[in-house]
Length: 271
Image 1 (cartoon, rainbow, N blue to C red):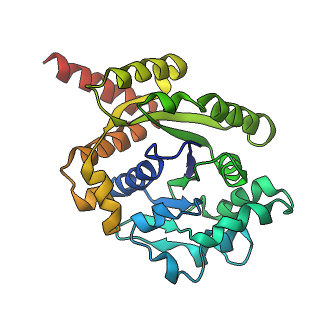
Image 2 (spheres, one colour; image 1 turned 30 degrees about the horizontal axis):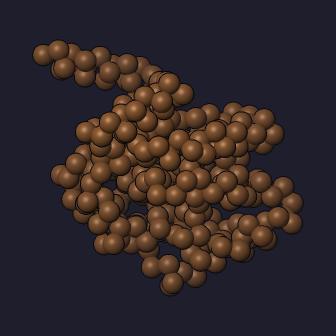
């Protein structure tokens, strides 16, 4: 059965979609059957994987409204073993329509249940808000991955996000856990970035991934070509960072391997 991870942060511009697209691509390249579910009405994850949103007959909106089955909205991408349920502007009105739906917080969960035996990992790219679509993602997910930019404003609203997760755990999805926190757009030369990192480490402790995603022009350029950075420029610093993040992510999901890899890395540093 697959593990479902919601990638969420109500603050925009923190690298949420970039993280979702590139982590998903690397998981697929590491032989994991992966599905990316785009529930952001902007559909940036979809266009970032080369999907022509204007030409879609069905998208995630059709799935949430019961107009289409999962098999009818799932598309293959150019990355082997990576599929996507795309989004387009039709999703913009979904939150209003879901308000009157029965068990409105569980619509996405019920829609994804038939896919759990098909994929190893299902990543959900959430909109930059804490509205009903994000609540649906938190209800459907086993864990949440939080990208945080290494700047002061990234800390603002963090308590609101954690409170939403707390409420989701209490009322909708008790097993929900924080998968981890990823520091994005990180500049180690910045005193501010290092100060913010210290605060995040105090708050989340070992939940913070050791891998930092640097500021990298190629990460910003890749979506305009409709491909993840591993296809666009596999040797750039951004691509190598997401490769390391995927490896760390997989290691964390296997405790034995995680400690073995951690020990190996420690030995290499000493050498």
